[in-house]
Image (cartoon, rainbow, N blue to C red; front, side):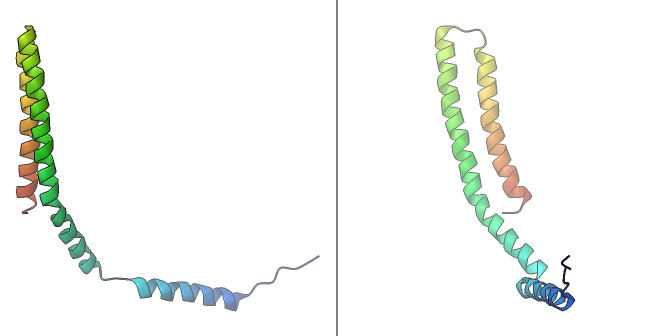
Length: 104
């Protein structure tokens, strides 16, 4: 029967090597948070412009849909107009609130 050999010195050296490599790659937590904050703030202007563009596109599609319903004489034209107008206002308000809330 073969016996299993244990090499405690080699296992300890491996653990020590792993710990030292983890310490070598460690960074300051505050610097990481500040860097992440600055990167996210950089995306707010682009995100806000994207929200405005989506709002404009939804508004145009909604205007065409309401116009078609109005010309065909549908009775729920007011409800559809209010829904599309509300969604456009929501997108614009969300973009504005995000900008003011995060102080960008």
